[in-house]
Length: 552
Ligand SMILES: [Zn+2]
Image (cartoon, rainbow, N blue to C red; front, side):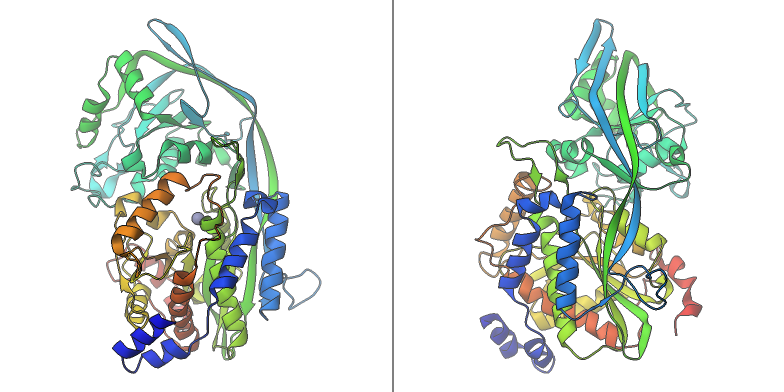
């Protein structure tokens, strides 16, 4: 609270709001994270006992906060809603061993799933993936971008072949070029690589993992790709997924290139130019065989609502994903539960504290929806599903404030958002932040493509103003050195690992502080009539403007 006094001393009129707004309780934040990330919740995997516990806990807390159910309409009871939205998902799991081998001029060598390659359970509809001596074709960054006059494929036929592709986009390493320099365009995302090879009818995609352009280590790749896979249910899954989707360790890839008469680094340099042409490795082929169990399951988004007093059809959304990786491969200590305390126990705790504040406060003019989505870790599927089948129209959704993996530590002097975006909503947040003594620090790693990696993105690409709020790293206690050191330690030691566990040492005072600002931003939107938009040259502006007539 000392902090509030400092702000009060520094600033004038705006401070009153900051000082008299609702209180956010660090102890409750800690308690919510502790419960949601406990071993009992089994890492909150979709369609597990952990999902039932998680959904029940969230509903119970929203109810206690005085909110209304905001989910699917209840059949046979007009006007009534449930607390959840059903999200049908395809569930794909490799059954039995994954046989992988490479053949070169000297013979056949076995490869190990998880260590050499990380092969995903196929989502193409194949029950048995079985390929023998498939040619390996290096396709550079695998980009088709007509608006940038860029085509890495040059008409190559990928039928029956495995496309070996680099992660990120062609100007990541050089830092300047057609693809936003260090910033990642969507062409740099692994989702794009898989989608593009499916469009081209390839047997499959093998992404070469490199830590810098991927922005995470092999452990993350292995853990995220070798467990159960999910997708939204599709009419023709083969259009979206080639049979083989995999990652390969960088050094093994370089070695295969060498055995195939090529130099990996030299070819990578070529791939950074427009003149690059695909190269098939000579006398090096890959074989694989594994069975896939495919089922349709139903997971749930949790939706709780404060109904607006005068403009109830307008909706402000606070969102965050409830799922994490569930139970998976054990770490060095033998721990198999991916607790997901920071990712995203913190975002859920933040949402619950905000809900408690809204529950106590006078009703806003517009409705406020608290949306805890499923299957983010499987590719933003819960938010993708909501954005495809919205419970409340997207045209009159004012904005989305998403929260994912917040800092459980002390107060910072700054904050950030995931990736970069040009939108009024961010300008409003930056202005508001001054009242909380928080400076906006743009994403220091735009090359990591974080704008495409959180649950606001399915909304953003449909034009809804949306961002993912991120905690700052310029700590009041210890400054930027302490904050950065901590960020790095989290990425290396805990991110998507069983060690992302609750700690009694976490103070949660930073979150408690910043929630005042996020509450106030949402409250301004919910009490007003304004419709924030994207900047006129932003890529999502056109999508928003299409529905302009629906907004009054
Ligand atoms: Zn997350």
